[in-house]
Every structure is written in C-alpha cells, then in structure tokens.
Amino acid sequence: MKPLRVVAIVPAAGYGKRLRAGKKKPFVLLGGKPLLSYALKTLEASKEISGIIVACERPCVKRLRDIAKRFRIHKLIDVVVGGRTRFESVRNCMRKIGASFDIVLIHDAARPFVDKKTIAQAIKTAAKFGACIVAVPESDTVKSADSSCFIEDTLDRNKIFRAQTPQAFTYRIIKEAYSVSKGNNITDDAGLIEKDHRVKIIEGSYKNLKITTREDLKIAEALL
Image (tube, rainbow, N blue to C red; front, side, top):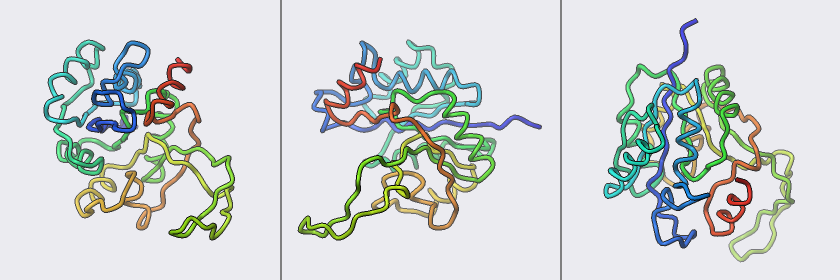
C-alpha cells in the first residue's frame, strides 16, 4: 500500500494576551526554548508527517524561519501570514496545500507536549473515518447556565470531552470545509464539519495542555 502523504498545519499567529508575557505566544520561552519549537520538533520527528506549514503574523515570518533552522525542522514547507482569527490562519495554510496530500493534520503551536504516538493514531483514524480529533474525558461535574448564571441543567459528563489537537482529516473533507465556511463562532476545525460528517474521537492526554495563562506556563515548566 502506498504510504499516506500527511501535511501538518500549525497555527501560530496568536499574541497570547492572557499569558501576559510581553511577547508573541509562540516565542515565549519554555525551558529556555521557544514554545513553538516543541510542537515543531515532535512533528519533525514523526515519521508519518511529510511536510509542515506554519501560520504566523507578518513581522514574525523571518523569526519563525530562523527557529525552524535552529531546531532543524527540515520538513517545513512554508511559513504563511496568518489572519485575525485561528480560522483565517488555518485557511491561509490550506490555500498552500495541494491535492498531493492525503491527510491534513492541524495542531496548535501552544500545545508543546503532543507525542508521536498520538499523532500517528490521529492520522490512522482520519484515514479510516475521514475525520478525527484528540480529546480527553471530562472529569468535573459540568453545569449549563442561563445568561444570569443560574443553573439550567447538570450535564452527563460521560458524554462530554474536552477537545484538543491534533485534529486530522482527509484532504477532501477539510479542504471543502474551509472553502465554503466563514468560520463564524468556530473554535476548532472539527466544528466546521461535524454537522455533515461523523468525527471520531480518540483519547488524548491531560498532559497535552494548551498554554493560555501564566499558570499554564508554570505547569508546563513543571512537566518538562
């Protein structure tokens, strides 16, 4: 069987206001290295990944290329200018991808602890079902509330998962989604297609946290 060609998209155009680090989030230091470098190194080391495309703000393009060179990210295909939203950044990357790729895997730059096994499983599952996300089961009791913050209902946490990345899709499915959608109120890529396509969930790791706040960064430092 012909090996799958897989391209990894890494949206890295966020500023990270809640992190309050005084610099763009992808370049915040974690263990003395740029946050972005951790995800890039894992994707580079993943034998399933054929190429990598990163989206960042225009002033950061050269800096990101320098990081890729420093950390020997040889699979980097291109660095594109991101948009105002995550949706726009991924869409800009999608415009650089041709039909020669079978699978598109999308991973947040701010998730440094993704592992090669999870990446491989996401790709394999997407090839089988067309769409796959990594997620972890909810462990807390979850409430829904009205606009005044009064409880409306207690949700069944056995049916609730906290979505992570990577998220992987066949080229055709995700290309179509980004071609027709405007991305309104969508916070992850699966949200673009889950009304029209079944999306398989595979279990991720609670260690695969997203760095959003200073507290997250402290936890990440402890996990190194």
